[in-house]
Length: 341
Length: 165
Image (cartoon, rainbow over all chains, first blue to last red; front, side, top):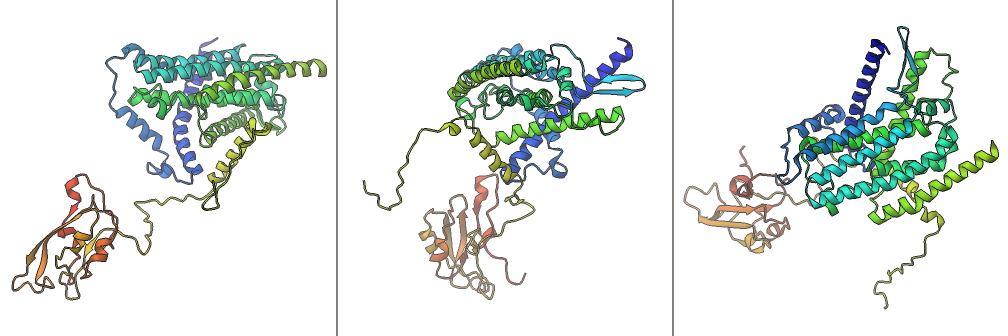
């Protein structure tokens, strides 16, 4: 790997990092706007035209606020918690193929930071690390409500991780690879995996809601039962990092869903339009982002539609419904593959 | 038991059928309801720029009226204070001195007239009790303030502007 390659990779990493931060920033704005529209309101419209400077104002507010670290808390872990949450949220983007290859000055640049052959496993590993941020934050606060919230988060994430992993196995059986780049490439044109794995996708998306702690599974934070949840003791930007991590997680899991089930950067007739390679790649990136934005919108749409689950209902759904369904899906996929191929 | 209104409804709780138990049709219906609202026009009023019109009989801030010659109508009879269920009105009466005939309509007038806007419930009984048609609740919403003492409105805020202005 030459110096130029390293520089190109570095630039790509920086761009993806900045894009995920930007999208997370504007997700907060989008969430408020969508909530407002779904409730026949206007939403934020003070800062700038249509309120588009609202995220900047929110960020400035978060940084200016007084920072409180409880005296009885574990100081080091208290700071590590939110850092870990946001770090694990960010590193998931490394293996997602954002597009095909760009050709700039004779260099072929694949729009993916790294194409490791266990990409799906890497994503799952990183996503499950995310719960450490919540767990450590809740524990370090030295507050029983925070701890309860953190425990709820941990048990919820573990339960849904299993169903998610099982739902993905059926997909891996049909694709035969763990590399996200190959999975995306296989779905060329209209061969999207959603067509072959509708049940698997359904399980996956439900688990993705639970993994990102979004409504209706946002049990780690619960105003009435837990005075807030795992972040009760957090203030100023440390709280901001937790909330931000949630939005980055939402972006990354939308990207994963789009890549695994909705063809990633593929769009119909992409190689029959007679366009130059770079243009096809750019359109592919646009297509991927449209899919991602749709999923982010869907996350918010569901949040403002469904009420929060009760804790035992959540566990029932995870263990008694989704896991058996995922196993049944594996069996059905196996039978179909054996008899049809 | 016999229902008094005849509107009693007996709730039957049948066990959920298959489609109800998998929740997905219900979730999809919910999503379709919320997305309909996404495209609906907002019902809110953008307050500082846009004010909602009040109805004809809206009861807002009180005002003490003047008569056709610009004299204060109030004679400090105390009926408004007496009728006030929240006991928000207090007043001190005084006697009109010679030369003040252009200021007060009758011999007695209110030297101090105070309404505590934090106590007032805007019931309008003072308006009804007043024999001199001196008090009306025809003003705007009482504005917000920071201190409790600033909500006690004296004559400076309640009396109508003089006619010649």
